[in-house]
Image 1 (spheres, rainbow, N blue to C red):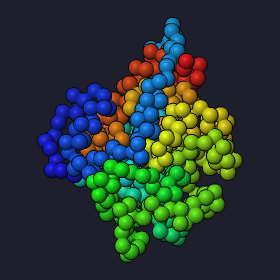
Image 2: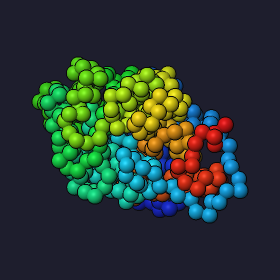
Image 3: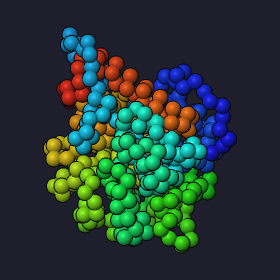
Image 4: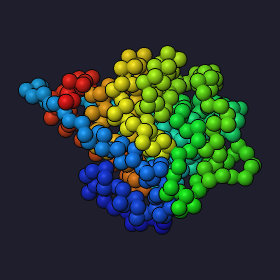
Length: 357
């Protein structure tokens, strides 16, 4: 991160896209490229946003929208908006307070925050920063199953309310931007605290396959705590069906920010078939390419229970710390409220596929 630039009037930001150039000014070039970049030719990275933009609404008229209820639920709990902050690594790259600022901004909006295993602040530090917030812990397999289990147990002990197991990273995708810049992740307490071995570029995350990540791993993780278990990184309806049959509490339709397998189907395109395959047996969340409140409405109309937002919130964190994150969520909420009124739907439960061409 570069020296912090003077504070700005966040009220002047009216769209999530305005945070990115501000973040670029405040971050070093290698750090910015790490967060912004995808894998290989970045085809999926581009298509992640384009897929939402291709979809078209079929609005209803003459419905009573004098009041619009935008509240939604995750795991049986009600929130002001069915939107959560997606797990993202090393948030100190964007702001000195990193995940501490991010969780405070998310908590101020009353929404869930998902902490990454590859965070720059510990589980305990983030919990102390926002003890009453809805916090989830995103899990990688780190060094050994025993160490990984200890992270889950720490999460449960410090008030995290769900484990979000990432299942689409047996190895890392081919990330040309990082190779050109020689980027390496900074200190990560959950990962670097596990071993004294020579550190790799990504702290060993690129070697999860060596621990045999499989459906048997999912079964094991479920026994480590009483917390709900979510599988993140599902794009195949076959895997979605298996996940639902295994008894997990939810899945996240995700391309991992288009940072893994390039030319993979975009989340927006994968979502309808996965919703059908799950058939209500578990919750279905989605992330990837969400840049507008209208994208949130499309996702919900296609059957998603909730939406996770990634890079735009990282840029908001870099631009304005906790206040930047809070402002980004406020923008999303206003866009969702206006969009629902113009769609002719009074509440989130009224969103369905009949509203999409």
